[in-house]
Image (cartoon, rainbow, N blue to C red; front, side, top):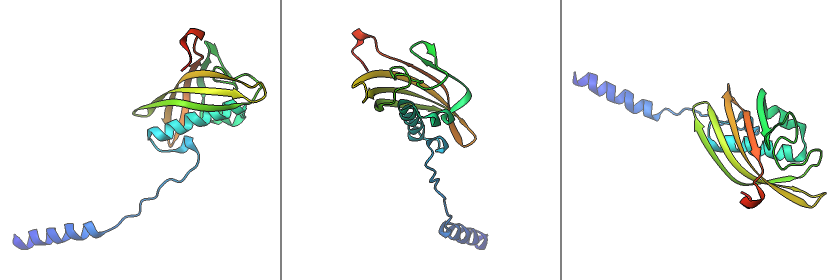
Length: 155
């Protein structure tokens, strides 16, 4: 009995010395990130940035059946987010973002500022973005954005 316990102790000790290689995902695509709030926030930031620039690469961040609303209207293409002028590229700054994860779903509340260098004007916006993890990829399944009313003073 003592020999058996001693043998078990040696086996546990030796197994503790065994190292295993853990491969870290180094993908630069935010949609292919892990399941952390930072990964989801990076996806939403990328969606806003591409939309502000009028870049069609933003299409790949959404599911084919995603519902996107901007200022109470369905948006089928860029600009998807409220406050961003159609056909005019600009820059976006995220001023606040909060991510909540629940299983394979995540939702992001985000405040942003869009600025058009050509028109020298800016617009504020607020969005709720719902993402779903499908296989190893995050995709946007719903986005709803709006601009603050003039008496609200912005986000």
